Image (cartoon, rainbow, N blue to C red; front, side, top):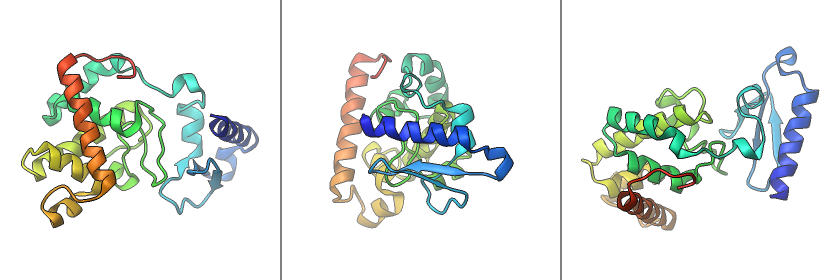
Length: 203
């Protein structure tokens, strides 16, 4: 918590002192140790455009997490559009970010459904920290994995986590502890949501 607050303070001070529009684009990210990085050369996939954070994502704790009850109609619509069970989308969000729309992993995955920058671009997601864009992109990518693995949810989730080539190469869920744990975690949330069939704050 203290590390997070320090990181937020650094970004806010920088935003106040550095006029981005006047001096070119600047990028930032917070690494796994809580260190804030700034650069005008985004040579790391974790970098996010600074003015995007300033204008669209105020760094306040109250704005960090979404209430899925507010997004239920949208998730239902996206699920219908891409033929993905909305409860599965919710389960992936729960496992990936625990509803933190500004989540950023050490590997550079971003937002609610933790899209890597390359995946976000492939899914036409301009702002991975925008909840609706991220949900749409994540659902679209999940549909691609489901189609690739003939609607086998276990393999699709493994591919979502470890990459489709890894899953294809082993012909199943790869023996990677993180991936095995991820698949079990998502399926656990999925079963719970199926049994309750309701959207609630914080899931």
